[in-house]
Structures are given as C-alpha cells and as structure tokens.
Length: 248
Image 1 (spheres, rainbow, N blue to C red):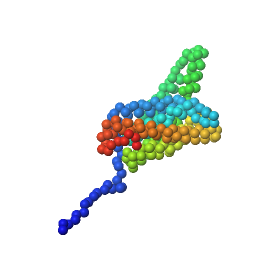
Image 2 (tube, helix red, strand yellow):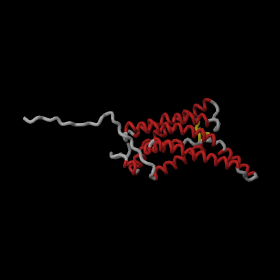
Image 3 (cartoon, rainbow, N blue to C red):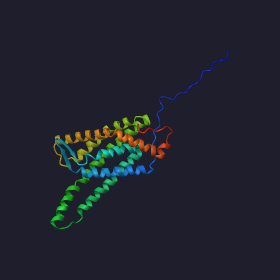
Image 4 (cartoon, rainbow, N blue to C red):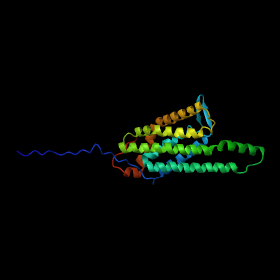
C-alpha cells in the first residue's frame, strides 16, 4: 500500500502586518494639494481675525475654511506618508508667514493724506493688523495638531494596510483637532475680542466639535478623493500588487 504523504500548506503569519504603501511626490497631484492647503491656511488666518457669533455660539471668520486644511492633510498623509505631510505643513506656514510679512509692509507704506486715504488706512490696519498674532496661533496649533493627526493616520495604516481607511480618517481627527483648537484659541482669543472665561470655553468647545464633526461628515468625500488619487498616482500603483478599491 503506498505511503500516504501529508500535503504541507503554509499560511501567512498572523503577526506579519501589511507594509503601508505611499506614492512619491513626482506627480502633479502633490503640488495641487500643497497649493490648496497653503491658500486655505492663509485665507483662514485672515478670516480668523474677525469674531463671529451665531446666537450663543462664538467662533471666528475662518471657521468654514480651516477644516478643509485638515481634510487635505489627511489626503496627503494617506497618499504620501508622514515625512511628506510634515513638509506640506511646514511649507504652508512658510507661505503664511510670508503673507503676514506682506501685510505688515502694506500697512506701513505711506498712504494718501486725505480723508479717504486715512479711512482706508484705518480699515486695512483693523483688518490685517491682528493677523501676525493669528498666524502665530495658527502656526503653533496647526503644526502640533496636523502632525499628530498625520502621525496617527500613518501608524494606523501600518497596522491595517489599505483596509479601514474610514477608521484612520475618523480616529486621527479627534486628538489632532483638540490640540489644534486649544492652542489656537488660547493665543487668538484676545486678538478677536474674547476675554472672559465663558466665551473662551464656548470658543474652544464649539471650535473643536465643529471642526471634528465637519471632518467626520466629509469622510465619504475624503475617502472617494483618496481612492481616485490612488488609482491615478503611478508611483502608488507601482508600490504594491494588490488591487486598489475605489474607496476603503
């Protein structure tokens, strides 16, 4: 009777994690994302110099723009990794600092010495004068918050690979947005006229909840955009063999 041989079947080790894939920055997509992030941050800094009230809710004029910068940061982190995301954050604030310097030069330039010129000068000083402090608040807050956000996303991707993108987008938002909001509000509140504890607490809590909920609401859009970019980034496709879903 012939000997029965046992067929050996190998299984991948459960402890082996899928290696995360990232694209290079040689394609035009990264440049577009970086430009969009920089413009949004600069406009947010201008808008943040104005205090805004919706009934009992206290916020600032940049409230509808700033969450978009985090969404773009999520896209950059997922596609290109932490080092490129860090470069994008630093670059955005270099441009923002340059804009703030330009505002200062515009303010000190001699204007027309008539009633209209003096009124215009006062308006420009009122609108752009506080911006340098807003830029400082935004610089420290966004740098800390976005780097935390990006680091968490990349670490979660190292565990799950291409799966559970929605969990990465939602899981990274909470801590990053909280750190961002607390630092920004602490520095920016006096500039926009928030001086009492109640209004400050309102400003922090509303800002944190609003920005986080906006990011959560945009998760389907962000996931779809990431899936679209992954399929079109040649270097991302080349970094792995498995097929890419339209949105994870």
